Image (cartoon, rainbow, N blue to C red):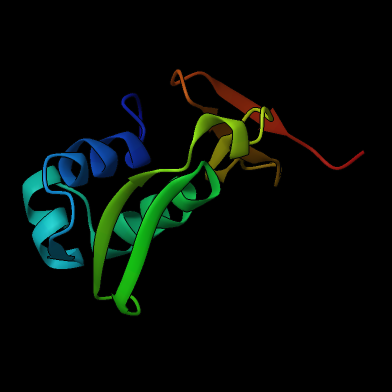
Length: 104
């Protein structure tokens, strides 16, 4: 998926509804994402420091906000998008730039 990346769509939606139980179906319907993309977005957001409680695994979540900045890693985050015909992994950064990742 191109920019904005999947997790940005999920984040934009859940930020407007803090402390409310949201289903994957509801998030997907509003954002135009499928259930797998929503769940991947949730995983990515957790890695990046979002506080998201699981109510029912793979089904519903509650957004609690962001970890304080002093706890968030300064590492650059990427989301796996797919693979090339040659088998390299295609990843996307927070700004929507695409990269090809290959084993070295």
